Amino acid sequence: MKLLIISDIHGNKAALDAVLSVPHDEVICLGDLVDYGPDPAECIELIKKEDIPVIKGNHDNAVASRVDCGCGYKYKHLSTATREYTWDQLDDSHMEFLRGLTMYIEKDLADKKMYFAHGSPRSMYEYIKPDTPEDEVLEMIEGLEADFIVVGHSHLPFVRHVGDVTIINPGSVGQPRDGDIRASCAVFDTDNYSVEIIRCEYDLETMCQRIRGSMPHADELIEILKRGF
Image 1 (spheres, rainbow, N blue to C red):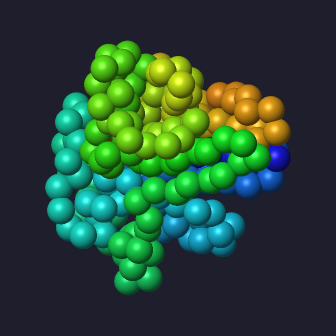
Image 2 (image 1 turned 135 degrees about the vertical axis):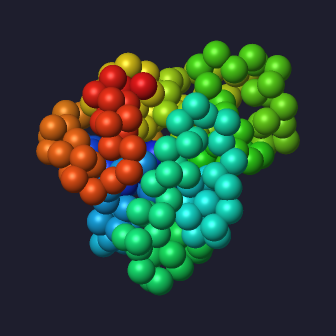
């Protein structure tokens, strides 16, 4: 089975459409449907229509519960600045959907276990990055019985091995941070336990026009998308 793993969509419907075109049998989303992008409602509606399991990300939590997003990222000010716009785009059903998202997903394979979270198994706010020291990662996953741990949050795609565990990050669908402007996702083959990071082209210029025509801090938001970081 081909399991498509997506994360950190951030209101970018065009990028979401692109990654969902990747051949797959099932999809799991690691969260952060909202903030930064112009299409939070459309992204939620598509996720609901496709009946995709979704984990609650820190931005989903911030929008739904009207609390701080809790991220230490340099673009936090943009999530705060676009929050009012996001709230204006969402109705009560969207807010209820975000509030009801689960904190983690577990999946049992033939002889392996997978664990899906937004930030780390311990917290939606913690980052596991390609260069996070191994001892710190081991603290975050201590006591968790899983062969594969799948996380988002950092917007940095990678596959790394820590002890006996393989950690996978599919990167960000709508807000890449690794210098590649294409939407990022991953496909995990549950038959042979292989994983492939996949990048998808989408209509970036039209997305930038939509941002410029409707959102605050449009120039900075567009520059980030055009740099890929």
